Every structure is written in structure tokens, then in C-alpha cells.
Length: 239
Ligand code: UDP
Image (tube, rainbow, N blue to C red):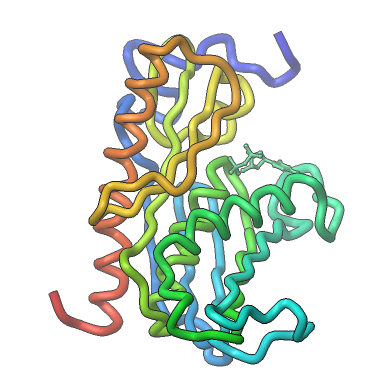
């Protein structure tokens, strides 16, 4: 047993934070919070606090990156030094390069890049406070920021993880569950078409467990989608 590891992660059919197996942590999203960004969103998801800012379509620098037939989408995920209990060394590292890449891939599928040739759409995700599930929080906030910027998109992209903790398949792992659980499965979807634009796995599942966790994560994504739509409705009205 590692230092700080709880004896059990599931007690009397409940998780250590009192949640049911299929329960999300509380989520709040506010669209349009930054004056100088073209679009932005602030998200709180359990202990995660995330700011997403979007700029563009705008001129591409360096120019050789420009594509004649479409916009390029660039995403930068950054974890603030003070966002975690052991100070994070500032600047990019392997993990943030990976998360930036999977975030771009999760989002670029829905953005109508062909409408804006020779331009760039830039998305910055700043993790101000982290408590597991920050890539899902970042993708969820970034897609609201893109919508807030008025970038034409086929859909929003909600994301949510499921995993295996104390032998049970559970939704939306917190940091203790992420650190001491058996597996984590972050997923992002496009709700209208039901496509999966992010699927990663850390740990081990049996095939049956994988299928159960995958279905649960998709259910979570659909709940997150509702909260994204409410945030946009609150700012812009409509149905
Ligand atoms: N974490 C940390 N320090 C780091 C990176 C991560 O304390 O340098 C914590 C943080 O709470 C993060 C969690 O570990 O949310 C899980 O990280 P992971 O790489 O699995 O990505 P995430 O679940 O945040 O998408």
C-alpha cells in the first residue's frame, strides 16, 4: 500500500466522496468571461477550475503553417504551477504536449475549418486547479469557448471519464480514485452524430468492464452536453 492510500475506495456501495457509481461531480460552466478573447468559458468540475480562451479565425504565424484550403486549429493545454499540491514545473512537458494534441483531435472534427482558408483558430486551456479529469474538463470548456467565439461547428464536444475503482465501474474519477484506482477511460463525443473523438485508457479492464465503462462515460458526456448548452443559453438565450 502506498503512503496516503485509503484502505478502501468503496464503502457500503458508495465512493469516498459519497457519490453513487454513476454520479458526476458538480459542474458549472460560464460562457464569455474574458473581454479580450474572441470566445471564452470558465468551468468548475468538482475540484477542477479551468479557463478556456479562443482566438480567431486570424492570420497564421508562422505563415508557412497556413493551409490554402482550410483553417488550422491549434490547442494549448497548460497546467498552472499552483494547480496541484506538488508544485508543477512551469512550461510544456510530455503530458501537456500529449493532452494538447488529443484535445485538438477531439475538437477539430466538429469545426468547419474549410470555411476559413489560410487562417488559424487558437484555443488556450489553462488549468488553474486540478483534481483529476482535467483533459475532459479542458475539452468541455474549450468547445463552449469556440461556440462563444461564433466559430461554425457541427456540434459541441462534451467529455467525461469513467473508470474502475475498488473493483467497481464508476463515472468521473476524482484524484484519489485516479491515483489509487485500477483504470481510467476519458471519452469525448459529438452528441448529434454520436461519434467518439477522444478515447484513451490508463490501467486495465476486462473486455466486459471496458464496455460497461465506455457506456457509462458516454452517459456522462450526454449529461455534460446539457450543462454546456445551458451555459450558452444563459448567455445568448434561445432553446
Ligand atoms: N496531476 C498532478 N501533477 C501533475 C499532473 C497531474 O498532481 O503534474 C494530478 C492532477 O490532479 C490531474 C491528475 O493527476 O488532474 C490526473 O492526471 P492525468 O494525467 O490522468 O490527466 P487528467 O485526469 O487530469 O486528464
